[in-house]
Amino acid sequence: MSSERADYNEIAEVYDQARRADKPHLEWWYARLAEAGGLGPGKRLIDLGCGTGRFTIPLAERTGCEALGLDKSEEMLARAREKDAQGRVSWLLQDLEALELEAESYDCALVSLMMHHIEDHLAVFRGVHRILRPGGVFLIRQGTLEQILNDAMHRFFPETIGVDLARTPLRMEIEQ
Image (cartoon, rainbow, N blue to C red):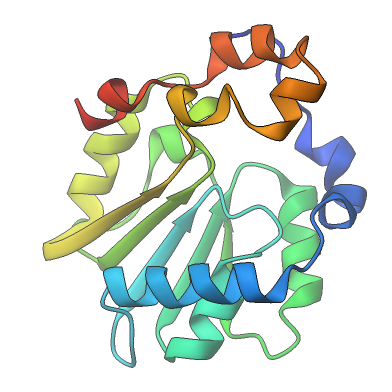
């Protein structure tokens, strides 16, 4: 993995501006994640690396589940709290590679576009396994190296391939 990392405390203020609210696209994802995670009233969701709550807040609002957004950037969490006008989500400053949460306390764990930011995948997977209730679901939303190398960004900006070769996992690595 690359040692160069984005400082999310520095970019939190403009983070959402670079990610437009593509409603049909996002609505599709919200529906898929809610269904795959079995989310609904009485269920507990944890969004690991939640950023500004782009998935956490809508999933909590649409499903009625109890949600916790966890991130290691205080500034990203501050933006999430601002967006969470109804106070539907609990927000926690913590590194997902060192989860300090009660065992068997969540029905669904979500990691969305975070695999390339994780140094110790095994630590995260062990932590998620520990905090999920029996029968709990671990959802990984991630483009793999095979999927992204021919996308528009990499075709138009080929210099980004080097960055992503160093930080983006192969599908086989995620599955293992």
